[in-house]
Image (cartoon, rainbow, N blue to C red; front, side, top):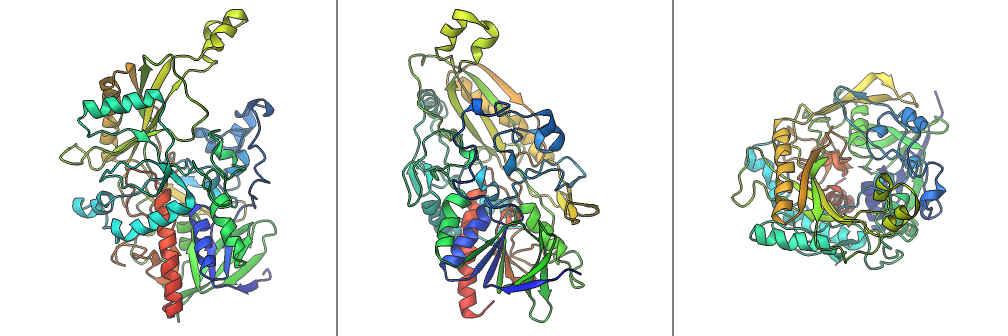
Length: 562
């Protein structure tokens, strides 16, 4: 038996990604002594962004992937994340395996900052249309909150994170507290104008809302439109734990950050009906440590927070803490995508654009809204851009010599395209469980994932390509073609659910304040808490729910309710 050390804190936060960073900031600023536990290594702002200012020629393999990388990362190789530029920020498939009953692409970031360092930064509010959909359609369970309850928290986190965008006054996509939005380029603006005419103001194309600074914020510089965000930004031009939430948390003097700390159990006290401690395995020494606290925030990412709850089984709840309802591990969701349409734009050969804008355009959901009816439930939005072909287009045709140089010196033709992102319904059969037959590098059991898209998503996918093609043609785009590159759950890197919020402990894992019904001093505020997925990127909602739960927790502590 290894020695166990015990240290007491007011609050313990598990995981340092988007949700964990926000929990640490809010709890420390409210005066609590907080321990922030991260299973991976530390990454320091600026100092550890080793590739942030490299040119393409400075990578041995020009930023691509090698045969060794393909062999070492059997999951990550399935899509774009596997590359030479930020490989160190993706978790090792070999060290941290999992079992796929059905294919599920699980792309993880195990370091301080988590995937906040590599995320796509698209930031949208859910609307009441999203919060009410389950109840109205008889799907899964009702969300225990509505838009009016979370709207002030959306505003709160937007102001600190820094979200650029434009106000559109759309009921299906509420406006936020925006920094000035990046401009559409001339091709995108043209298509936007044409869509408004063709669809009588019912279809909208505008700049995608992203966590990139178009104006400086305290301690953070303005985005330089390099579109190199996932290498880490020395200016702090995009939201990450390192640039935005960790600095103010550290500044309070109330935060202890402990990397290389794998939390593998919550210690439940039957008498108080509360969790009293976490057990931690040091990832470097394998030493077992124990830390106590009054409240606990699980922000380890959707599947890892659920894994931890399942690992915290007792004789009361053999399925894990929070399993009394039978819903822990169930209702796994993602956003299905990798399909859409593109075509050629004419009439703008005398115009160009500046820089590498880090956000494209967005077309919000329009299906099953305002009288529109489809043979499936919910809907989808599109993310895309217009651009001119670069010098690489000349290689195949001309190859070498003066003609090649002349052609490469001129911008190519304009094109425009968009990819659809569709809502995935919660379904009890889409689930995760512990696989005790397989262990990770540290001797801990891994997750078994059993998830697939169902008939509703399959029906939706037919429309996702057709509608985009029709919109492009209506806007005068030429040579329009559709594509569907196939999809497996997890590829969206928007995994959600498995510890859902609800109104009744008999049908949900968490209450309206993100508390575990079975242990009210445990809060789960990452993606695992989601009751439905909506059609928009979910990270902004995780931020808002985390800030809201932290405020509730501290108030409850002061009242001695926890």
